Image (cartoon, rainbow, N blue to C red; front, top):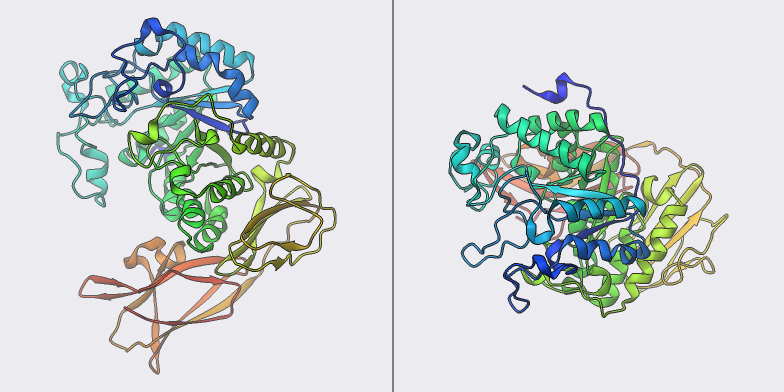
Length: 540
């Protein structure tokens, strides 16, 4: 049964916030040493004593930074002992959703945090683990029929395995079981009411059926509960499909996480970022994308990027649509490439230039909704340079990224330009300096684009070859070779004709399919933007 087709899923609307701050509770601040359990500050896999009282004490810091919403790591009753050397402090090995973990202060500490956050106008987002329970959860014995079969995922491209088998051996809940569904829904409703929550971050939705997610969204939206999904993969076409079928209000923008960190930390071209932004119009109209540059599952930004590039990456994140999210400590330069090093303790003795920049940019976004909700398109693009402009209610915001060693003249007149930040933007020159990031606010109206015909020519090729264009947009198969656009051979050259938006940015490769085997073209992705003709040399 597909719930999305049976119900009109009333969207809860965007979270009314300008900056989401993620807190890994055990690593943030120890506010109550009486609830400490097996603390070892020298062991990166042990508990370090952070708790909800500590977070409550630090609310003024979070608010001063500019954040008006907090995403809490899981705080439910959890496993507290290591498993095969891996720590349990992160909270994702839940025993049940019935009680708050005593090591974090229990329900009393949560309610105190909720009341103080509400008083200060800070929204609370609770992390919900609907997919699985801990290895030693009592539920395995008391509700044996609540779980899928005990098999571990082997083929990560198999949809059945992804949603029915175990992730890292964790007992996998069967959300199609009516008792399981009722348990997950009612516990969510109870905690939302008790803790004055604005919504939930839903862990690991890649491992749950869309039917469950859309049914849950239908029920929780009755109380305007905001739902943020974690779909841990970088294909924007797949994310768009998930957004349409799940009914959730928001998703982490993983495609642009990879695009931005590749761009600023790994010297990639601007093509992926530009192509992802162009696909924005294919997401559900009211979907809110949460942008980010690191989290507790990924390398820290400051371990991936040089200091100046990290600043440019953060500036870029805050210059485009969506709700920015930062992970605790990124603003003070915390480092760590892998678990558990990327989950180190918050540093309270550090002052970092990112702190003031985040505060400034958050205030700017609050004052200029075009930065959060503007409709945008790419106005200029080559291998090293892109200019992306957003429009809303007569105001425009232009982001310019210049990765080249030469300055670039801004291609549009500035009619009502204003200085927007002290570090990265200027209205005093029409040039975009080399190796820089700039942003302008101006008064310009959005002009819908027209359709253009683009011809793509690939050589060499023969009539016997099955060559296809496979890329990051639906018309090119969404990176699925079986759905790619087939090329037609004429006189030793393969051709494709596309009728596309003039503003479209298409990122793709040429692939050959022979006896069900796929051979991808060598070299970087090809980029098509505002060209009537593009010729490509095919190199298998």
